Length: 111
Length: 114
Picture 1 (cartoon, each protein chain N blue to C red):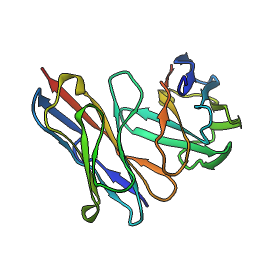
Picture 2 (picture 1 turned 90 degrees about the vertical axis):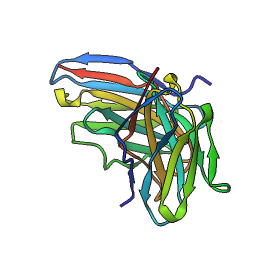
Picture 3 (picture 1 turned 30 degrees about the vertical axis):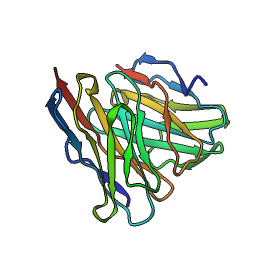
Picture 4 (picture 1 turned 180 degrees about the vertical axis):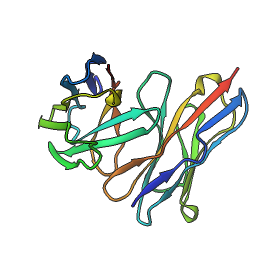
């Protein structure tokens, strides 16, 4: 069965620190990959997505993610986080006609 | 576009009562999804529809839960009877292409069952 793993459940960083959130999936076929963000008290919003082409994807608010097919990974990165990046981040993968979400990573950025 | 609309935004009810959550997807979107989010279980897909037809309801926890989509612009998720463990935030999302496209989420309904 298709599954998505986010290894870090909670991450605490200081402002200006660099961020990398891991995402691995298990599905051997063609996939589309997403990162969603949920700010406190809000609904999920799309951060970035990969369908095809350049495996390095740029998203909103300075986020980027790299698709490494050989590692079945789609890690999210940001070189310098801000307090306003405090949120929960979800990786999601489509495979067999279904979008599967990871369990989420809660990021707390301290000012 | 107003985005995905959900009502009510908050619902407090007593155990045993019937609860109906409503969702209006983005106009033109073909697929609609219902999710439940809790601290313990995270984000769970309950059911999704394509062109108003339920495609996968394997995530519906029990027979107490039912969902309908009578037309392209409206869906309901009903819990009858409700139980305290049903307390959660219920999100509705819609998309153009059910398998691959970006899902747009509504603001959610926060349900509390006492």
